[in-house]
Image (cartoon, rainbow, N blue to C red):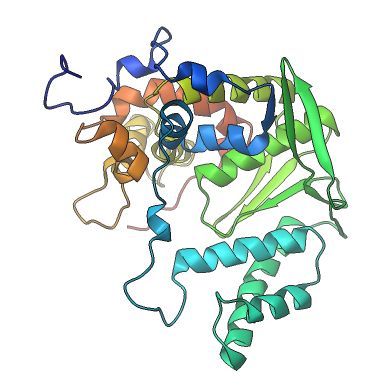
Length: 339
């Protein structure tokens, strides 16, 4: 850092970090250990949160989860994120074949919900949200095939043994995934990886279906082996090298480019997509946008560096474009401009 300009302040050069010949950090050997058998969650974490993954795997730094900080006073009701976490857990149990009434009863007794009748009502509302997601995911099918307890999928991809829990399927053979959160990189990458592994190891004709509160997406993964090789290779590099990757901002860019606001001309399409991605990356004057650069791991790596999304776009394209192009998002309808 001694030779770096003071105004940059980052742990590494965002421009050089995306290059093919970027040097491996001192912690590279640490990150390279034990990659012969990988859970799908490790690959997902690298692609969805590259900054935190590099800090953890190469430098041994685990930053606290800012969302887990306890509130200053006991809330009357869980905040939106906390409730979404409960909805997600319930949805996963429903996809596993558990009875909705049992799930609601146990949630009403849990410490995360209120006591007595209020807790019963709260648990019922949460389970209803989870059930709606599951029903949307299996829409058009006559039934749901829950995975057997302990059912796992393991496949050899090159020198790596990749493993995951078997997904729920509907009567049409689609692998089903739900997220209680608005569509984001975490859910998209997770469903993409699991669909690719399922197609590669079990059913080459299957498709995946991801449902979130704001989207329903089909995942094709027509070349599952190529998708898995891409994910494994980049996850290894992300663990060993600090790359200038901003997945949340890139997803906004890709979605805007695929479905620009109605009335956007072809000539201005790229510019509008970059502007929206820059807003996700750096925030705006309103303060209503949670800037990606302000996340704890990003702050640790970049400090006060000003990042231009257009400058880091090529690297993001290389990593995340194959994910996006394997989904129905790539052919989305034009976005309605609500301004």
